[in-house]
Length: 260
Image (cartoon, rainbow, N blue to C red; front, side, top):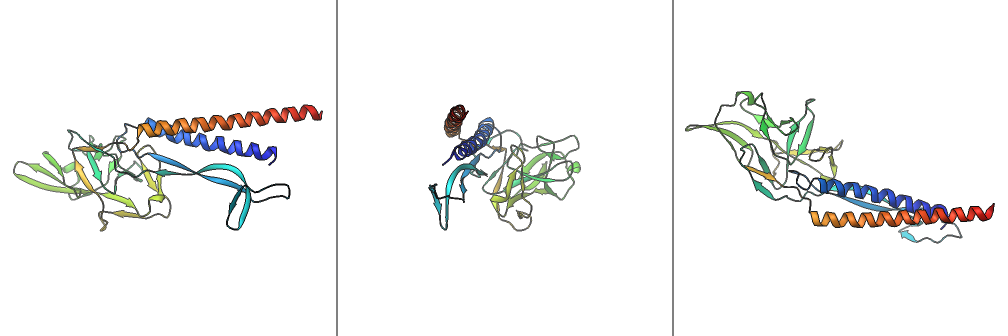
């Protein structure tokens, strides 16, 4: 392997570890964020298909021989594990057990998915999240006209308001699930969208999803001890690649001095 190959491996290693550090750092920063799903970075080897008579292939796949040119971040997968639920005092705090995401709409009526169920009603009477995005509700009574009373949210999302002895159903909170979880793309710490061409399942069109828990929120799925270990490994690997790059640069400097 020539000097260029060593430089290429070191550079790809630095880039890959930087992406890993960014991902782990983001996980650690969101260890206490409601509904946050940890993200895991995977890597793949980079192969050079061209092998000369003076080079030896050190990586081999079926039908292909090539030199290992390092690695790159392949994808950032979302850890969809169930987070622990914690009890709260607000009737608008909701948590999902099992599959599914709440839907929220921004000011442009763009749908996002989230597991963060720390909702409240705004000045207009709409059920919204912390960013002010409207929660997707299949209304039977417009939210602005919901009567005052005790709010009850059933496991299937059916929402009713108890006023005295009378309980009035006012709507059903929508749940969504990507047909393929690999199509889910993070667009914020707790917001997601489905990639173009990806399908959505809903509890409104016959999809069987999880159950909703009222007076509860889902904790982050970040495991702090494991994330700290991942960070130390990534930092160590980054440092080793940086040292290889520096050593290679020193070698080039020596060669250049002798060739002058």
